[in-house]
Amino acid sequence: MPHVVTQACCGDASCVYACPVNCIHPTPDEPDFGTAEMLYIDPSTCVDCGACVTACPVGAIVPGHRLTAEQQRFADLNAAQFDVGLFASDARFPVDMAKRLPLAPVSTPEPLRAGPQHVAIVGSGPSAMYAADELLRLPNVTVTMYERLSAPFGLVRYGVAPDHTATRTVMRLFDQIAGHDRLRILLNCEIGRDITLDELRARHDAIIWAGGAPTDRPLNVPGNDAEGFASATSLVGWYNDHPDFADEQFDLSGPRVVIIGNGNVALDVARILTSDPAQLEATTISRTALDSLRHSGIREVLVVGRRGPLQAAFTLPELVGLADHGEGTANIVVDPAEIDALATEPTDVTEQEKLALLRELAQRQRGDGPVIRFAFGLAPTEILTDDGVVTGVRFARNTVAADGSATPTGEMVDVDAGLVLSSIGYHGVAVPGLPFDEKRGVIPNDGGRVMDGDVPVSGMYVTGWIKRGPSGFIGTNKTDSAQTVASWRADVEAGVLAR
Image 1 (tube, helix red, strand yellow):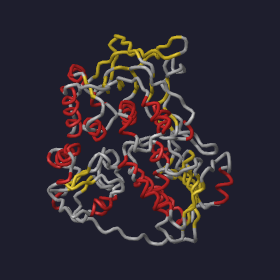
Image 2 (tube, rainbow, N blue to C red):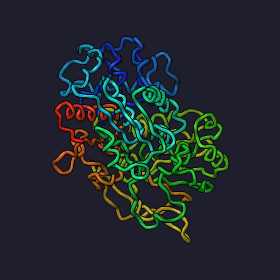
Image 3 (cartoon, one colour):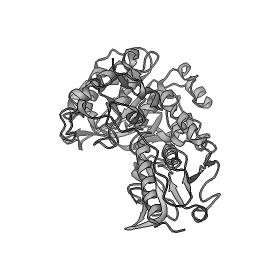
Image 4 (tube, one colour):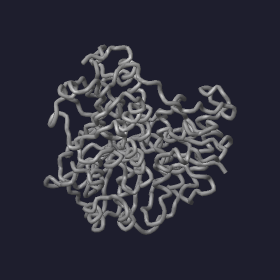
């Protein structure tokens, strides 16, 4: 039985390069690699060699005969992509998948055709670590990494849900990178506070800014300054022991929490808030947060999206993980009437599977315990308050057109809640001294080269979310950082960098 990629897939493509028969897709040079929700193994060409298992940094690949009951659905998802999905009879893939040649072995890159280079990387999250790994493949490059916090690895440490233990194991790979003798990581060192950008540029031949997108997109509705309204990001930081959120307080005594937005972060938060605290004891969750959850009065978490089910921002693997999480977890509730009224026509096999799973959830028998309820077609217009404290949310009901666009019906819906969390996306922060695209929340760039209009800023590069916006997964940063390092190398060898 072939191997299967499961929910923990980080998408960094290490397995792709390890596979001797090229059965894992999409590869970094194929369409949809940057947007695919996970990687897939073609069951018709997999030879069960296990090379991908060893290569996977998060333990996401499992032999088919060892799948747990919660993982069985992924075998069908992998097969479906090759039977009727992304890779079947697709003009973008002109070569029969089964006849493709094995990938060429990964070789050591040619040495840099220039003198020794000392590169600074600002940040130590996934994009920074992958950039360092790429740079350190060159024997005449040394790297200094600047991290403002007291521990490295950014969102992998402070953003991944504590019960997603497999995903968090990518830190083992980052530990190996961090141990390289030509990499120095300076913790508790903030640019602008401990060292200026100009001083940094004077010290190094080039700088790669990997500062991520550390703030939330604001929810600009009345009442968003009330007590009891917060960003989902702050709650994630709180239960993950992020030092910036150590002093945050969240009132979990009320029976209902509303999360505005339905991406993967919203699903993570909903799952943590409704989990049995006993199941979280062995995780890395903050002990303060765990104690609060033990005394929580939450019985329902309402996850709200303004458009239909197929426009929901959560990925299919995340939904599968929530649906098949096992005993002791919340009931997942979906209104079948909402699906019928708001679901658009699926355009690919992933959307077909997502819709089928939502319909399955809508038919499930509800048991005892807390509830995670999905609601679609609702756009927030006001945070309801009483004497400055949140009491609920007012929504405008929408219809959803065939193209996925939402139109208000004129009907308003009020929902009571003791805690309201906004989870509508991340946004980058401007770096003093560098150009910034405020609308997109990124540093303008061309292949990672920082651009001031049409002119490259010599020696300055970007990678990760501050480069492309808050999209993709942990492993997406690997190819993203490789592109940036390739641009830097081309500039070094062309002699265009100026100190």
